[in-house]
Amino acid sequence: MSLARAGIAVTFLTQLWLFFMAADSNKGYQLPANTLWIDSIIPGKQLALKYCTSCHLFPEPSLLDKKTWVNKVLPNMGWRLGIRNKDEDPYMDIVPEERELLRNLNIYPDKPMLSNGDWKEIVQYFEREAPDEPLPQVKQNAIINQLSLFSPKPMVFDGTPLPKTTLLKLNNMSDELYVGDAENKLYIFNNKFEFKSAWNVESAPVDIDFPHNEPPRLLTVGSVSPSDQKNGRLVTFDTTFTIQTPPVNIDHLPRPVQFTYADLDMDGKQDAIVCGFGNNAGKLVWYSNCKVSAENILSNLPGARKVEVGDFNKDGRPDIIVLMTQAWEGISIWYNQGGGKFEEKKILRFHPAFGTSYFELVDFNQDGYPDILLTNGDNWDYSRINKNYHGVRIYLNDGKYNFTEKWFFPLYGASKAIARDFDNDGDQDIAAISFYNNLDNPANGFVYFSNEGNFNFKPASLPEAALGKWLTMEAGDFDHDGDTDIVIGSYFHNIEEMGSLVGSVDISSFPQLLVLTNNTVK
Image 1 (cartoon, rainbow, N blue to C red):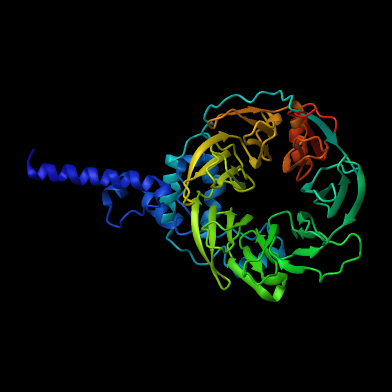
Image 2 (image 1 turned 90 degrees about the vertical axis):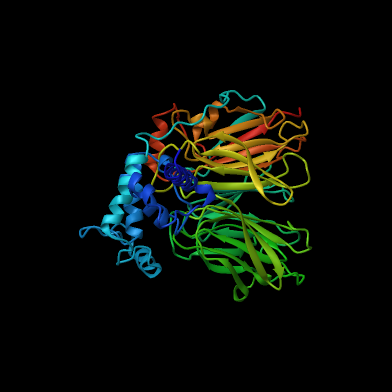
């Protein structure tokens, strides 16, 4: 081979290597500006990499089908880049109070960030490369529609025609189950699921904790539907009216969904850490000594979903691990530097259609380091289709808080998973629920994974799981017999959503809760 021809071959292989590197969104590789060969072969690829990765990881065209890209996702993305037709108004279907907030955030800029020609190249690229239909899920062990481990009991109360359960939390000290409803209600049941009381609250309850010798602290979301209004609140919930300590009252929270407490600044007083999910803007924030005036913002990005606290680098200071959803999906550890300062390390990153919904820290391989149990199935966006990458996952910790995916089970619309030793055999089993589940088999809205060892999990469900759309789940030994029971809560946005389930299964009533009593110990 001549030197000239050899040089051409090397150049071609180099360009080919760059192409495959660019196609791997997890590497975060940016195409150099002079890669003209790739531009000529794949028009729009370089432009898509440039503009898409300015906000989030690059979404491969195969993530969605052509129709969803062209008709749903890309039009909104165009608006966010200032691209719109003269007759298009991105604010037309937005209520006035939200419209002004969006204008202030400059979500839909008036001036385009790229030319119409470049935008057409991007649209044509996704339309050409995307599949005609959503890709199918990878075949896994079939979910057995029989589960003798649990005895199911549907619960209907308060004459509510449309289940809207937003909170399930067991108070182990009082043996009470707290149930939140989107109609601004908070119900309290005893451990036999007998009604005790009901309370009107400011907005839908989404989280609550039960500090020792103090009244509960309740988090209300402000708006269940997507909103940028700051109407959420964290407040002391005193049902006895005998409060002795100063009450907590942190308001103007941007659609908060979860909170926890820890002494982050190590001054001997508890601080509140709040996940302000928001919509287009949010707030991951902590309040020293639970005071509104002592606000410390870690991030103004939307999508903070769940936070846990632990000393992950063993330096004696409490750190924060948080799940972020929305466009900037991933999990980060905020390492405590002392003096109220934190430094972020991103430990997992996902593309913007991934749909992360929940996580737990669980030591699956018993090496002394917490692993991550994660669900991704959020489908309340512009691409409401079945996604083959939705499901339940385990990421193993290498001991230095670097995580690698070890196990994945595809489950459409997975909304939450928890790990417990449900069958009392010494290892961690998994219970998972699906909110946006595939209506071809509504019973798969709840799936129990029996741990058979070596990360082999045997999936099973039960027919009663088809009675609802499960958004919330709580576990505990309600009947005090030595095993762990489960309660799952159903939520329907509207009558139309309920009607779609009626057409799939034979249902005469829709329970708010499904109690799953564990039969391991008799």
